Image (cartoon, rainbow, N blue to C red; front, side, top):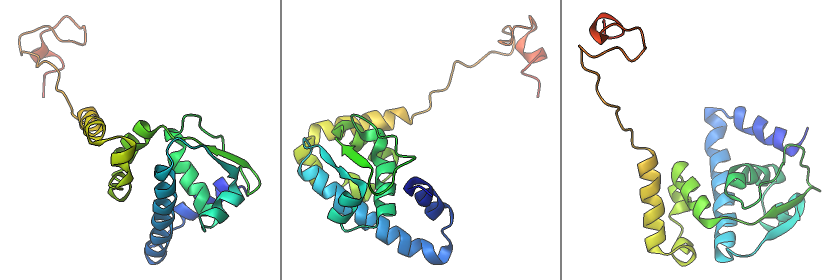
Length: 165
């Protein structure tokens, strides 16, 4: 079983009794790794998955979960579905994309890290937060009047076609 399969299995088989311990382990590992990455945002983090897990003092399956979460925020994503502990990992973040994705994941313990001000600056953080909020805003389309032609193309008035309730 690959580490990615083990990670998926670990997530899918959490129970109410095991979830709290799992979440504490995962979120503390994630916070530790992000603190280091944000302290050195321009540096490429490389090594085998096993070496990096050891560096951050986390289980390899937990580091695999971290990779699964950060993959969309990298300048070059990894195809880690067949990864094992000897697989080579390359992590070079796109800070703006990472901050946006942390907002989308509602990970306040991550997007609230103090290093973000040094990495992006307050103005850029506010700009990204506004863009994220704007992406979640639903804009209603133009209201169709009862006596207008039905938009389905039937040729009938809206009230006699799709507007019937």
